[in-house]
Amino acid sequence: MTQDVIKEENLRDDLRYYFMSPCEKYRARRHIPWKLGVQILKIIMITTQLILFGLNNQLVVSYKEENMMALKNLFLKDYSGVDEDDYSVAVYTQQAVHDSLFYVLDQFGRLSVGPISYAEDEDGKLLPLTLCKEYYKRGSVEPSNEAYDIDAQLETVCVTHDPNTTNQQKTQNSSFFDLDFYRLVDIKITFQLRGINLQTVRSRELPDCYAFFVTITFDNQCHSGKVKIFLDIDAQSCACRNWKISGTAQKNTHYLLVFDVFVIVVCLTSAVLCTRSIVLAVRLLQRFSRFLHENYNRKVCEDDQSEFLNGWYLLVIISDLLAIIGSILKMEIQAKSLTSYDVCSIFLGTSTLMVWVGVIRYLGYFQKYNVLILTMKAAFPKVLRFCCCAGMIYLGYTFCGWIVLGPYHEKFEGLSRVAECLFSLLNGDDMFTTFAQLKDKNILVWLFSRAYLYSFISLFIYMVLSLFIALITDAYETIKRYQKEGFPLTDLQKFLREQKDFPVICIFFDSSLYLRLVDSIEEKISHNITCVPSTVCQSVSI
Image 1: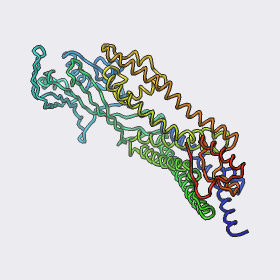
Image 2: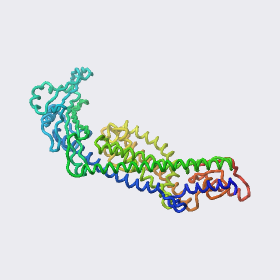
Image 3: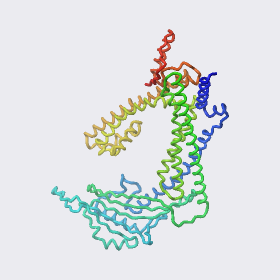
Image 4: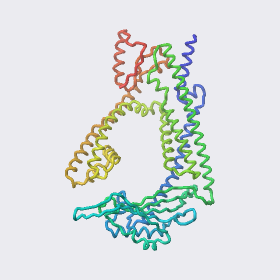
């Protein structure tokens, strides 16, 4: 055998081994599939880590929400337990405003049944409640004479109240409560409370200490006769300064930290193995490219290049990096150095999603399980182009619905809400409610809304959505046909099968043009006509 033949056979053997499944590699060379084992171990560990963190995060979120509800019931007069809209309570008379304002001051001396107390400064003194009113600098309004005189410059006046002497200070600052509602813009009451989340003890976690920055706002910006009352809480957790706990909570925290370190080690190992595979693939691609160039004077086509540059490895590496970052944040949270539960949950959740999606790669080695992968790969280019065109129409309906129906329908008040509403209608959800909730006081807008909704539903459900499904169905039928009749062979596949006649045209298997080209080539071959030059490799896709 000549040196060139030996190099060709070595290249063919290396390529065959690279594209084998883990089981085939083990049967061929008895190499243990370490990468597959690491991926299985990583799936188990990351999923376990996510569940543990998710249960703890649920306790934190429920603690904040329940404290929000408790403080609303404690400080808001006549609160029904359910917010009316984006605000909690609304009042409509001047007396009701004063009653609600004094009710907050009276209740400030009474706290809820939970472990909550007043915040203290560094000297141990209670932090006072701050009450500020914002109003126009000068103004007089006479609606009966259709006259007004307003200075748009705003002024702010604030007073403080000590929790122990609230009733006395109400009389001392009585002039503050003389409100000129024509000039009044809003009143803000701010104070700070401290709390401890003891429910984490049941899950063998150290309790967190919380600082609640409470803001109660009396909103009169509209000057419509309706004063909206909001209660907002900014809850910030921190490590408790003096604590002592008996039992296994602290020991359990140490075990969790060790587990997180092990997750990081496994993810690093996975990332290194996948990076090694990518480097090996690039080297094999270079060798195969040199072989084609030296022996056939052409380049590797795009479909064959995509076989080497495996996107699954990139997905695994990205998921490993996200899992490592999320694990570090989780360790910092458990050590009470950070409180970014939401950021950590995003990293861990996204990494877990990518890890489970990556499992599909190993199912792709089996012909009966890889239909989903092949269908998505075949349909994706056409679906993406179709979505770009349909998206332009969708955006047009979104902007039109927001500007016309926004003042009259709660589902069209913002651009994001319009997009969500239209997406629900696109899937046949909540249709009658969308039609029925529109206020029919303006007959012109009502008629426009009917034309708008009927045209959108008819266009997107009966045409756009049907075409979208047809594209995917067409790709699926093409895959099923190729699984029965065989997929078109590329240069790489012919080389692995030891076929010397490399085709010029590298075809993506879902192209209908391929069938016409094959028929034409077969017809010319049957007449002993050579129709394929040997210098150009062109990728054809529809």
